[in-house]
Structures are given as structure tokens and as C-alpha cells.
Length: 410
Image (tube, rainbow, N blue to C red; front, side, top):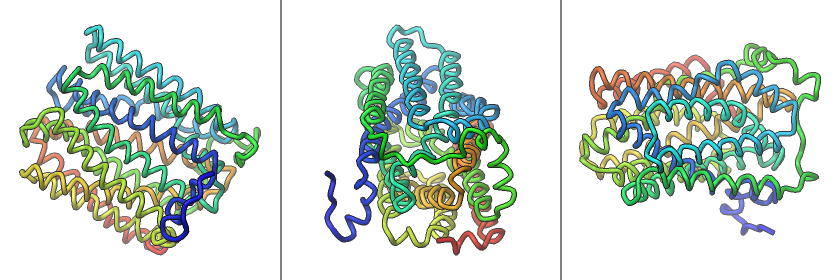
């Protein structure tokens, strides 16, 4: 049994006391390495096929299209059915899509429209999968360790962000993009196996029950009525539109501004991942646990400010350091926001509220990717990134003064 030592380390990793969460955590960590490899390889593939910043943004945007019609249904499904089974079948579908893209690349038949179609299908599966995954964590650890488990999940995501891009950059340089897609397909087995091995008796089932979960608008009405949860959703959604899509332009920075290849691109993305891992460990500590609102508002200002500095950076080593800071600030904003929202929302509405939260975030992130790619095409990558970073900074300031209660939230 996992028994962390006492003190600060034990506090930071206390969510891993739960067997089911350990299976989930390490399965996710393995799979997410593959997911980040695919993200890097797909962006590089699109840039090779078209050489267009607009098309980089378009691929990210297309994945958002299924979110609009599926959001409310996805939340209802997460509250109505066993989340473990919903996640299992969604992860299996994503594995199949990864293998299909690998086959297209290996046979050298891949075209830009193939990437668009698969991005659309992946977006549809993620629309169903993500709300269930978000609401599943509390069933693994209970509310007492929810904040810590969410921060550790964020740490797994960003640890993979360190390993995946660097591995993808090296693999692409040696054998092309197909290998990255193939490895991502196999990596889903870790999640599927972890779900199979879980002790179902230890899962704390939450949800609205068969009938109450049919109320598709329950989450909408809750957010209309409750000011503090609404503040969290508004802040993260607008940040997703303006600040979060910065990664779309990193291939352009790597090749055209810093004169690097796929390996340099992977290093830049990994630098943001290193900062995010550090931010996740900090967010998992008690220091943030009692001051979530302050962490969220601080991150919402620091994140776009550092992006603005990166936009006009021309030194490759300095860019790496700035992206470490960007990754840290990103998590400082997002991990406590997720924890705070899940702690505020009643159990019977969690799936539907998290579906709105995740869908707005992912949908606006992809719209922001399209916007960023379009502005970069009309102007330049640095000007486009700087403009959206300024917009993100203004959003952080507006939320800080419009919702002062958010800063005080524990």
C-alpha cells in the first residue's frame, strides 16, 4: 500500500492513499504522455502539409464543433450513468482514432482533410469523456482529498507535457510523425487497464439519479443563480479564448524565430510542462488549499503577463525560462479553479456543471486557436500573441474587480 512519509511530502501526495485513485493517476500519466506526443506530432504534421498558421488554428477549432450540441447531453450522461464505464468506452474510441491517424501517416496517404475529420471525431468523443473524467475524481477520493487529487491530476497532465513533447520531437526527427500517433494509441491501454482493475466497491457513486439527471438545464440554472461558481466559469472560459491558445504558435516560434526544428519545438513545449508540474505540486500543498481564490486571481494576471513577455522574446534560452513561468502560472490559475468549482457544486449537479465548464473552456480554447492563427496570418506571430495576451490580462483585471468574492474564496 502507498504510504507517503509524514510532513509536507505526505500532505502534497495524500490523494495517492486511495487505491483506485493510484490506478487512475498512473494510468492517466502513461496515456497523457502519448496524448502530448500526438498533439506535438499533429501540429508538426499540419505545418508540414500546409505551412499555414491559419490551418494550425483551424485544426484546433474543428475539434470544438461537437462541443456545442453535445455539452448538455454529456453532463446528463455523466450524472446518469456509471462514470467508469462512460470513460472506458470513450478512451477506447480515442485509441482507435489514434491508430487510424498512424496508419494514414505510415502509408503516406494522409491529407489535411483527414486531420480535420479525425480532429472533429476526437472532439466529439472528448465532449462525452471529459465531463465524466472531471466528475469521476471525487468518486475516487471523496471531498476530503478532492482538491489535492485534482492538483495531482494536473501534475500528471503536465508531467506528461514535459516528457511527451521532448519524446515526440526526438521521434519525429528520426522516424516521422507516424510513430508518435502509434505510441499514443497503445498508451490508452494503461487507462483501460486501470479502470478494469479498480475496486468498484470503493467508488463513491455520486449523481442525480436516473430521473433528476434528465434535467439538461439543471447546471445552467445553477450557474445563473450562484455568483461564485459563475465567476470561476467566466474567468476560465475567457482565459481559454484569449490566453490559453498560445501553444498554436509555438511551431512558428521554433522554426521561424528561433531557427529550430522539431526537437527545438519539443523543448519549448516541455519547458511549459516543467513549469506546470511545479505549479501542480505547489497547488497540491496546503498553502494553496486554503487560499484557492487568491491563487486563481493571481494566476489569471501572471499567466497573460508572462505570455506578453514571451511574445517579443528573441532569445531561445530566455524563451525557455519564460515558458517555465507561463506553465507555472497557467496551473496556478486552473487547478485551484477546478477544485473550487467542484467543491461548490452539489453532488447531483456536478456532471452537468462540469460539462458546461469543460465545454466552454475547450470550445473557446479552440475558437481562440482559430482567432490566433488568423491574426498571425494577417500580421505576425508575435503581434498576434501579444494582442491576445493583453486581452487575457484585461480579462483577469475585470474579473478581479467584478467578482471580489473570488479572491477571498477558500
